[in-house]
Image 1 (tube, rainbow, N blue to C red):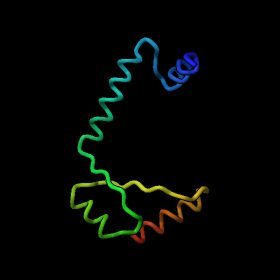
Image 2 (cartoon, rainbow, N blue to C red; image 1 turned 45 degrees about the vertical axis):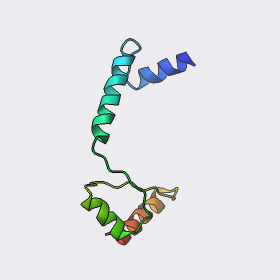
Image 3 (tube, rainbow, N blue to C red; image 1 turned 120 degrees about the vertical axis):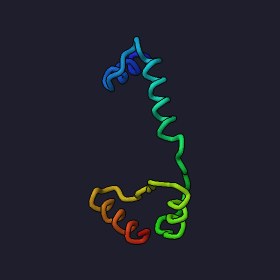
Image 4 (cartoon, one colour; image 1 turned 60 degrees about the vertical axis):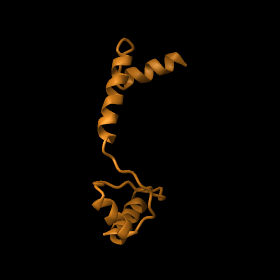
Length: 85
């Protein structure tokens, strides 16, 4: 298992000698990104809820798509955008 972890680290540009420094840097980057995040879960298409989140300071939204193909996912995104905007 350790060999696999080392290989994965090397593939992604990490080095064994600096793994703790790289881990700390990654954690610090995530903390900075999430420091002022507002997270909420709402049903797609609820315009009032999305507007309230925007007024609360949210500047992005994440959606979970149920489509498997690229074309179907794009159609689903389009439909969600029309419902929300």
